[in-house]
Amino acid sequence: MPRVLVVGGTGLAGRAVTAAAVERGHEVVVAARRAPDDDAPAYVDGAQYVTADLVGGGGLEEAVDGVDVLIDASNGSGKQAARVFLHGSRNLLHTAARFGVGRAVQLSIAGIDGSRYPYYRAKLAQEQVYRESPLATRIVRATQFHDFVTAVFERGRPFGALLAPTGTRFQPIAVEDVADALVDAAELTAAADTERTIGGPAIESARSLAEQLKAARGSRRPIVPVRLGGGLGATWRAGHNLAPEHAVDGVDYTAWLSAAA
Image 1: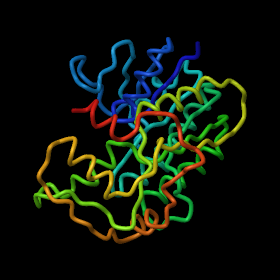
Image 2: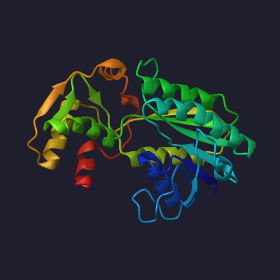
Image 3: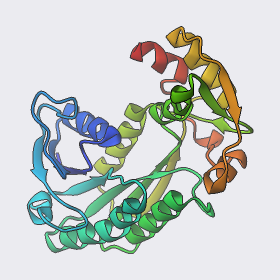
Image 4: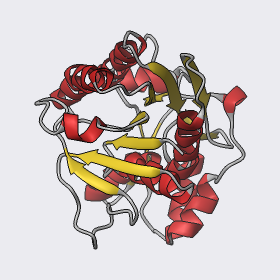
């Protein structure tokens, strides 16, 4: 079994990837800015944790030493996102190549081509960094996680409401289904650069999904329609966040809400 490095392994996606890889019997190393305590939610029993800084470069040599394939589930917010996705990825891939790591899997987002949203532009640039690296790279693009869609609605909490972007549909997917796809890609040993897109099992309006959330929680908060501005709103209203031809037979939003209750 290949030795797998999960970068950003304490975040939402990284934790799921780590758990999936450990469950399949892989030797898993997790690189994170801070190693979690063994009683923390981010900790996965059976994984080895190392402290590493993608942007600064500290700890990367220890992280990649002896690794066969890396899975990049790193994330960043605001201006930090561009630094992590560009400078951090270059540091990681340069170090990995020096230590003989042959393959990489990168988590990306469905429908980001041509978007004016800065985060999506940074993510697209990260894809290019991976394509230009010496490592055989497999990119897995996913639609929005159930957790993310829920967070969009919950932006209305300070106002006693659920916010539903108008003219918007989502194809939410369980992070565990995405993690399985990433580990599947890591287990492919052929040295070929590929790209795969995956989406949740159903496409529904933001309003419909918000109604499901409201019902599942027994909430009395009203659902307030809002027009999301900027590049992100334009991308979503155009439907670029959807991938109907790449739907997986996974956990839908209603089932996810029931399990999370």
